[in-house]
Length: 602
Image (tube, rainbow, N blue to C red; front, side):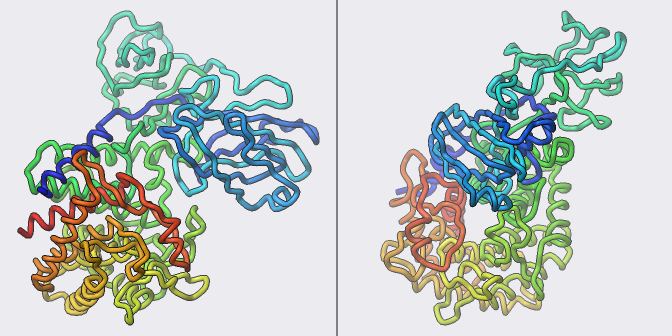
């Protein structure tokens, strides 16, 4: 079976499933229930109905448009009694215990149909409060709820008792005066246009230029105030504190991600696109390289707007939800490394500002233990707080290595090397020659589970460091030795068919694709660096052949990849609760990288 042919099929399927597409443009009402800095919707009925009496009820309704059928997790934080229904079925009702402990989040698992889903909240006023906060259970996930009366507008409708549904559209008092320049876009299904005219009437003639590919909202928008020098405005640059607005009061146009993954920024996509980039280079495939460049370009070109959007609209950005609310290495490092690599390998311009933003965060804001080790603290996803994760080696070291290459500043490589020194102290299980997934600072102990992908992150990231580190670097021998020690431990756990297991030393754990690909990458790099002998190249080839044979098909699908994880102190969580997902982004790119390393080594 030709591993290159299969890798190309994987890349083509991913690109076909996530084609380049314009951003989704929606109206947004800024005067009602909106998302706050925690990316959840704040339904404070005391603010909307200050004269409500004890026992009064308020009702909230909104739509959630699901790309696929499945479950999502919501949290509800109570101000007072709450009842939540989805598609007519009650899914949560508060009680005397949850209402008294109204500082706690209540997690609710909800089944969503593909397409349109109706969420309804019934809220009762008591002396404790009136309303709730509801939305994503996991910090910064972009669950967007839409108005029932206008499914193209983000937000919720609400009413008191049997009163009218609010908000009611009001026309903005501000008008353009004749003689001013106006910039309009028609969203009536006929395609948007720039129009330069001397009046505010709907355009009859003038200079038309197609923009954005916006569709879906039957209204006219304008940017006010506007002067002649603004004729060639970029959509992504706010002007003098204002931006694109509808005629209705407090109603703005905001860009959102559309279906699929194109243009999004998260760490699994950083790994995926790294794999596509290397495959494109190996084959000199212009389509693949252009796709990667276009994805990264979309991310860097929308970053300035996203920072403004977060500040202007309540603290939850419509784009770059992770990077604009950065509180972890997950949010920035892996995709940041991909952005840097795209600049280095493809000459993509414009990445420096966003990479400096990440570098500043890592240097000045990322929490560190004494000794400098990265750890997780003060995250919106509070379960992760006060922990050290193997994953964060990949979320930091590849980025730091490329900062060193780009800037020539030794501090970046020194920081990367120090992370391995510190993580070895905390997480290396010397008797097993394996790494524990997590160190829990609250309990003062490691969890003792050698999770496959966590160990994969470790040795893959160490190979990235060794490829960047000069031979005469002070810690070079120390890093070389740790790499060889780890690889020996992993080699001893390779299964008969060439793959590795979800829990590396547990024969009952399932065979897992992403860690297998990472070990294959690291082994091939180690051979190329002269640190490992030819046996490891044989092991890598056997691993890649097993992945291609057992975990892919001719349609470019990838199987057997563990989904994104939390952590636990019991192996059964990793073996039975962390299930596999088809075409999971945690595995696609690393499989392509493994194929690249084997083919490149050949």
